[in-house]
Length: 283
Image 1 (cartoon, rainbow, N blue to C red):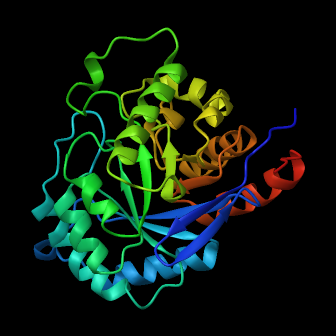
Image 2 (tube, rainbow, N blue to C red):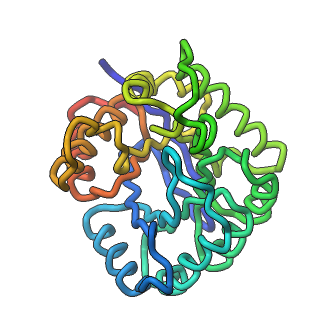
């Protein structure tokens, strides 16, 4: 089956990235569970980010807080205590554009001042009404990620008959919020939000029906970054995470993803090169 993956020019900061020529890899550096008082080391974070670049990461994302079943919403102060010293270290020492994962406008505003070029908002501009204006006042890229409910309600959400259709409608609402704030669509990528209010097999349905989101006319990012549904039946040594990430990323690519967001950059980058060629993706 030939999957058509549209070509887009993603405007981020003072540059543009062409999406659709090949799959881009976003490498994740997690700061979760760390704070300055607990010994966060900006130098070590820089080394980790540079290693991901060497492994093939086109983009680097800093993940400052947990977003999973039962997790609490993290405050801007908590995020900034981790991010500020790290961003000061990374600012002039990476070639790849830097993204942060946040839904807090205060965090986004300070991070942009420190050189961040992409904001990945897991709420799709729904949690903090000030965030859209912060994005619009800058020239950063924006990832609108779909979330169903909130981490404290994930477990109580009832199933829906057509989850991908719901995701498409909700992402269109997020795009409408962005447009209302004046944000140029050329700066936006969408993410269906694996495991964010979706149970087990529902995530595989999203992956295999990803091409249905093409109607949004936006580039698509998929994040198989240590998502529990991928290896629910096994105790997760690193090798299992890597194999699962490669498998899920390949499925996403074959079904139209422009960017995959992972921890296991080297293995996924190799798989992406093969998938781009072997599956006859057209642009």
